Image (tube, rainbow, N blue to C red; front, top):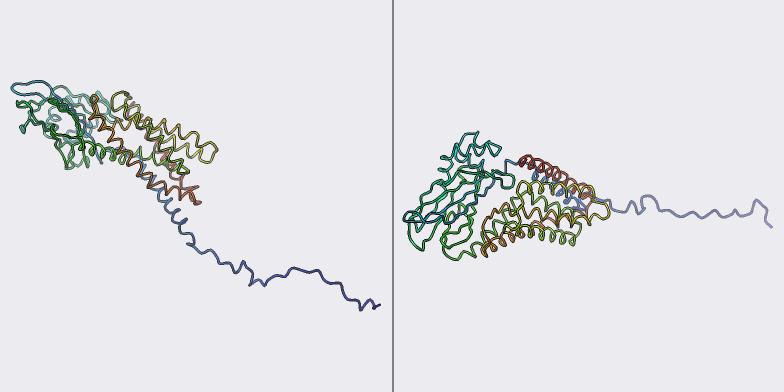
Amino acid sequence: MRPAHLTEPAPAAQLPRRRPSHLRSSHLRPSRLPGRRPTAALLSTVAALLALLAAGFAYPAPAAAHDATTAAYAGVEDGGAGDGGAEVVATLDLEYDLLMKSAWLYAEAYEAKDRAAQLRQLKINADAVTQYVTERFDVARDGKACTPRRARDADVHTRGTRPFALLTLAYDCPGGAGATYAISSALFPDGETFVHSTQTIVHYDIDGQRGSQILTAAEPTLETTGDRASHQIGEFFLLGTEHLLFGIDHILFLLLLLMGARSLRDIVLTATAFTAAHSITFMLAATGAVHVPGPVVEPVIAASIAAVAIADIVLRDRPGNARWRLPTVFLFGLVHGLGFAGALGIEESWSWELLLSLLSFNVGIEAVQLAVIAAVFPLVVLLRRTPAHRWALPAMTVPVAMVGLYWFWDRLAITA
């Protein structure tokens, strides 16, 4: 037996071996360098730019609508037999303030706000207004100019939220059976600098010939003979595309639907509901089966923008959010369809030519709608995969909601 002082010490507890600090894996792991995820950084930047664009694009500037484009509406029909010829009656529907400015009348004329004041100004300036219009809207029969005259006093009514002057002119045309009529419009030309372009939507029913055509600076004249079906399809298709492209309120509503969609299924269902709804009311209103006044429709369209934007902000992450979207989109789509019909401004009896025009116009709207979805929705999907979506989507939605509310009160005040 060994002496105690020679006894071997108890083995020390085994401690885990550690690498030297300079060899630890945490030090060997490459650091995350800036730019390692360029896609996320790029999408964040795009989101910020889109937010600023949404705010700027939606910034309310009601007067600017007159600076871009305008539509004039003309209905031309037989007025009966005249002395050795025929009479043609043209009913023209023209933006009131644009008409008064273009006729170079004093400020009191185009700044009149209420209907009574506008009627008074039209009566005081009847000769100047008639001269301006008849110098730019012509009817000819078999190549011979018809002589225009004022048939009755002008009236004022509202299209959407804007006052329009309703002028009735009679054209005395030289005689001749089986005549060909030519209708020409040079109303509100670019050279007057009040608008950049004007489309005159003409509906005619003369000497057994019926049809519609859109007159522009590039094609200012129509003739009432010949097969115009294919021409009509192209014209009204283009008119539909232009209406949606320049209809800021409809575009903003569509963008809200895209920003609120979380999947391809969502956007397919939402777009289908919106398309079905506005197609139904557009066809019903354009054919005269349903009539809802513009002063009612336009504020509700503005309210639809604000309502969907606010709901997207408040209910964004709540369960059951999807349940309210489809019924709401369908309901508001019905109202937007009434707005499309009001913008087209067709006031003629049923015909297959009318149906062709309406279908072409609606297809033009759908073409632009699909193009917007194809361009924007992939960006929204990519944005949702980055942390930036938490602030970027609300940042784009808030200014749109504010503009919708502004438009609602502004349109309500105009129509009051």
